[in-house]
Length: 344
Image (tube, rainbow, N blue to C red; front, side, top):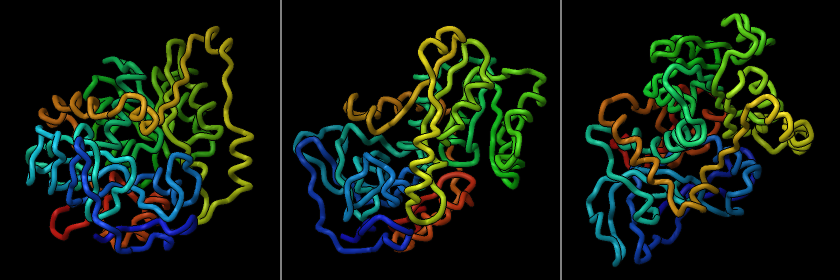
């Protein structure tokens, strides 16, 4: 099979299309002919050597996909050859064939493209875990979403709106009209020199938010925390601010680690606020699977309350361009690799 291999840590061009042996499923696994593979910011971090959960190069990254089952293990009874599915894998998604546990796949929703299905196992399960399971979002609350124009950001906004919350986003200026058309109440420019001040002035409150989804890391969680009222929950799901340029910047990494926001248990107790960290891969390791989150999204899928927005689909051989597009934050929605022509 062909696979997009991370040959070493470095700029996007270290991703090379190479031949690799076809994987074979174990007794509880399925082999899927990949139609689309998701590209996530975690993949950019893995390429730069900044994602500790990623395997060392040379390796195949990518942990979400959609496609058609071509082989099922002896113990698999729920799926069969030819089934159209979407799923998660412990890396290996940037390839023509991927094997994963049958528990990690779900049927592709009726009427959805493979590109749309690819967004569910990563972006929407992350947003669901962050907002519903960890964040306990409630109707009438006010939610702030960082990077609201990205794959996870749009997923979070849709889940927030479906839960009856008021949703406020932070995004690049050119994305604002599209986000407002999706139902967000307000959107603030991510390049603002006084983001906190603007948000406070916008609502006339020192602490206007009940729940904040922070994807940036560094000092951003501290600013997010300052915007939450008593009872507020801050869920941290990423470290996008680690990335500057196409190669690992060790000095920047050290500075970010040094300056990363820290919260004392005493402060959290006195102010009655929560700070929560979420790493979906680690959570999946403990739970055995995060597929239950996909199942719990089904009512919203059926009602049309949630549906991914696809920013771009690149051929597998153009993975470097896909990474550069995402890293430069030129996407509004999900970026995917189209492994089979005509299925995006």
